[in-house]
Image 1 (cartoon, rainbow, N blue to C red):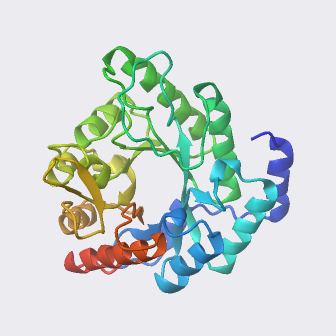
Image 2 (tube, rainbow, N blue to C red):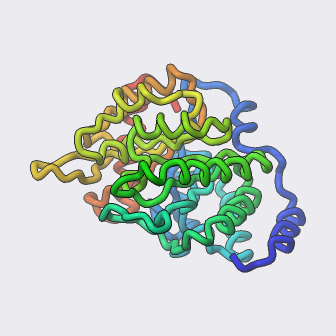
Image 3 (spheres, one colour):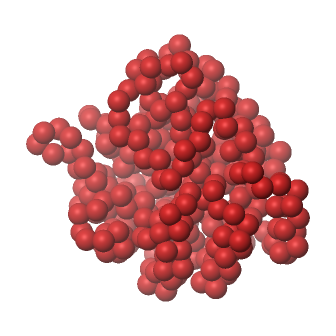
Length: 322
């Protein structure tokens, strides 16, 4: 994050980036019986980025990939040479980037008591004071990887968010306004360790922040990890469908002890067949990105292969040809 932005952007210009963004490409693409497109988060397969691209393109038959970590570094920490190599590999395997899966706002809100929950950092350790700088870095990365979307969160979950909710919303609103200047969509992921975890909380947040470029990264698996929560159809029914701009696919199941655990897609409690049918019906046209998380089937690569097959089986049962 210390590299000169001027040099960085100059390098992108010299590399001859295409002006066509993913959302524009989608509008130009030939229609199929499925209105959305499949992707996978690269580091769910392996930290070896070329291997991840190879599997996504050749084995899974995908044209899209979501970027979070590679070579044991969070995407925000890649240097110029690593970015150039990643771009080369994406071109080699003919993959487009759905979004920058950044850790933006996945930090504690200042001087507020948080709940004690497991927190996935994904090799990112950035303070609250660095969030504005991180946002600028993410905007640079959208240009580097020719995408128009940045994933974010709304801070580690508080024991009581009411006293802080308005201030958190204002922080997110200002970030959306900054992104709008570069025609970028800011995607808020519902995350069980953060303050927006479920469908009803996501609906309330979207109502509070009406900016058109502030959209939801809908994650039914994360919502389902909350005890007593039914992401589909209950949570989904509350969401403004035109504000869903990305979707993560994973599965979850609650054990006899009441604790939730990740499962291979199709082997948990999420009604993905119904969810996919509803998304198709409601005109969803962006990414469905596999975020495996389940590690009960061998290596991360083996687990991702199993879950990708489960995802494709659910699509088939939903009568969708994606």
